[in-house]
Length: 471
Image (cartoon, rainbow, N blue to C red; front, side, top):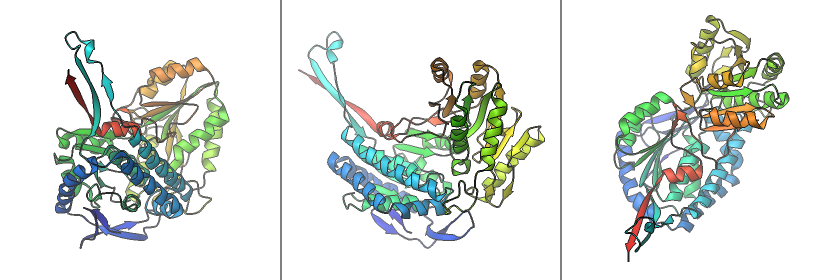
């Protein structure tokens, strides 16, 4: 495939292979953009931003709705692209395509609702003869840096709100999974309504082009989804501009003695091993009350052992591979560190190539990286607790705070957990993996800055402007 630069699909002499992480087979090649290409894209976006802000709301809506229609008509093709270049099974990939369609349609509807408010200036003595309002205006150019784990929908979560708000956007997709982002651009251009330079997708390696996008002061907002270390690096380079970051997690789920045990097991097995755990909402720590611990562990481990690992395109497969062998080795290193420190391996712990078995451990010391860092793989650790105070303290005791979960039938317990868990979202009788594309999504501490979710991202990508009349 070619990259999209200033309204044209362009190739380059330097190429980058896109390979299936499952077997290393070549899927396609994309251009290896140069620093000059990224500078050209930003220059084109300056003019594109002026065109974008002049687009009437109905045209922004039409671009987004027709893009969603285009993807819906080719649903299976988009799903196969996600499954082949990334880590999801074909069943998981189909769900991502459906969510992307929803994200674009919600973006179109939020464009309709992007409005300001009147301001009662006469609340201040001496301002009785003033009236006015504020409106929301686009920031201008948004730079989007997207990850491999949701290579279509997480791009849509940046592009959809940016276009709905009247911005230009330059997307730098993960070099391992650029095809889905390029196919999203193809869908949004299909209407013929999107002006030149408003949307660009520049393919290439990491900091070689990413640093240019981050540092350029003509780019007025950086929207990044990825790891904490890279996020910190971006924050240090960006300068005075808006930053939105979703940086991952080490998500805890509390299971109380009055929980529906079957519901808790099923929800958390899915939450632990969706996309082979390469998911910022992955259930990494399960805190189970002492009264039901043995019963929960027996069922959770049995259900984990029944998980089918294999070919991503096989309809019967529950879990595929990791994104590359280095990622699989990293997960294995974290598991082996915990076992060496005294943890008990209940199931899993085996790696072959890019595959890693669904893995469950208990008695993991707090000093181990599994206990406090993000594993980003199919590994979940179990803790016993006796009081809710103890569980909440453990849940809050890491430098992440994206989402947490609690399973209970007691409303007071649920409300207390919702109030005291220091996270961006609390899921009650759901695993931490639950999300819809309209809700505010983001975290505290090392889990990021700002919120995604279409309406909330759209507000991040605009600036309020006050207009006041003295009569």
